[in-house]
Structure formats: structure tokens, C-alpha cells
Image (cartoon, rainbow, N blue to C red; front, side):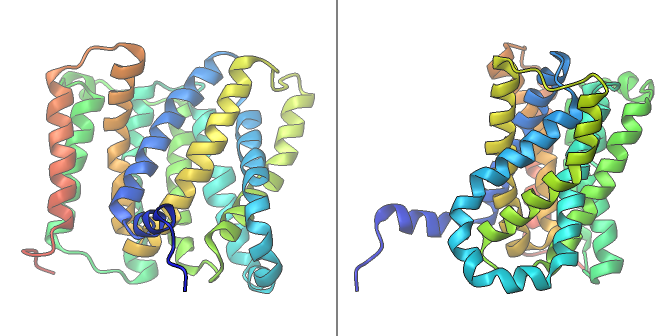
Length: 309
């Protein structure tokens, strides 16, 4: 029997490394926040951006998933309620709420509210899935969240106390809750090839977004055909959609929703790093403090020893 090549062996190894996969998720979703915000500020309508993100992602994945779909289509068809839930919750709804919210809220508010996703997942996983947690996990999440606050509010307590919320914040809160439900529903995903699962989620998301996209376009906000819009759609489809959802689904499969959701705490840290590297923004002491708390909290929460039930 011919041994698999180096690329195949490396891919198989990485496919079973949940923390590396979740690191990629945080990296790609951080890029989504930056690219999405920049595109919307340059006239990109939020529903249009979300629709083309998922429709292009569907077109990218479908050719690779087709040969598996011809064999496993019955499993997909039998799990249509789960697929409907995954496509509308994780694909269509969460990102649409995020893009709409970014029109009327500051990035500082959006970053804070997204940081509640792991906590929301944990709160839902305990009663719905019967998951058990321990003192170490909760303490680690609290430490990591303190790091998120340090970065978002730049180490200034006054910025936290003086924070005000807008209509955009409400949209993002709704998206946070829907994303948490997506992570829960993923536990009941059909036993099919990962590419089929992605194609199904992206396809359902596209269909769900088509009516509001047509309404938005006909009401005077069509997607502008510019270099910025094309580049933004290509990025959000390839990386935050195809690559990130593939890695996130696999991470949840290996770790469970509550543990995998903790990776979202890395997003504010990576947004800061991208801002420093790409936008030339200065690196401050609170950045270092926040990153240390985030990484320390995640490591503490995932330690195998020393936590009581």
C-alpha cells in the first residue's frame, strides 16, 4: 500500500489539533471585523456583504463537496431541520447582525459584546446539553475576559464606566445569542463529510439572505462593483467563511461547544495585533497586559489537573 505524501500526513495531523484550528478561527474572524468595518464605511451595504459572502463561499465549497454529496445526500436530507438551524443561526443571522450593528456602534462596543459569546455558549450548554463545568474552567474564562476588557478599554476604568450602548449594540447582542445557539445545534450535525456540512450551511445561509438582499438592492442600496467591494467579498468568503467555519466546526467536534467557544476570547487580542501591523497603530502596555491575561486564562481553563467539579 502506498504511503500518503507529506502534505496529506501534515493535513491529517493538523485536522486533529483543535487548539491550532481555533487559533486560525480567531485570526480569520479578526480579519473579518477589520475588513467588514472598512467595507461598510466605504458604502458596502451590510445585507449585500453578508449574502455575497455566503453565496461565494457556497460556490467555492460545492465542487469539492459534490463527490461526497452524491454518496451521503440521504444523511443530509434526513437532517434538514438541523441544517436549517445551522444555516440560519451561524451563517445568515450572526454575521448579518454584526454587519448591521457596525453601522451604528463603535468597534469598542462590538468587541466587548462579542467577548460574551463563550459565556453565552456555556450558559446554554449546561441546561441544553447537560455539560459539566468546574471552578478552573470558570476562573480561566474570567481571567481571559479581564484581558479582553483591558484591551477594549485601553486599561482605563473610566472608559468602561462611561460606556453607552446604541441600537447597533442591540443587533450585536442578538447576533451573540444566535451564534451561541449555532454552537449548541452543531452537536446534532449529521455524520457527513465536513465539506458537505459546510456546503449545506453556506447554501442555507444564501437562500435565507436572498429575500432581504433583493429588498435592500431594490430599495436603493445595491452592492457597488468596485475594487474594494470585490476584495472585501473575496476575503470574507475565503477566510472568515470557508476556512474559519471548517476549523470551528472541527474544533467543536473535538472539544465540545463550551471549550471551543473560549477561543473567541482571542479575537480582540488579534484585532489589536492586526491594527498594529496593518494600520500602524501604536502598541501600548495595556495590549501586553490584556494578551497575557487572555493567554494565561485560556491555559488555566484548559489545564487537565487541579479543578474541582
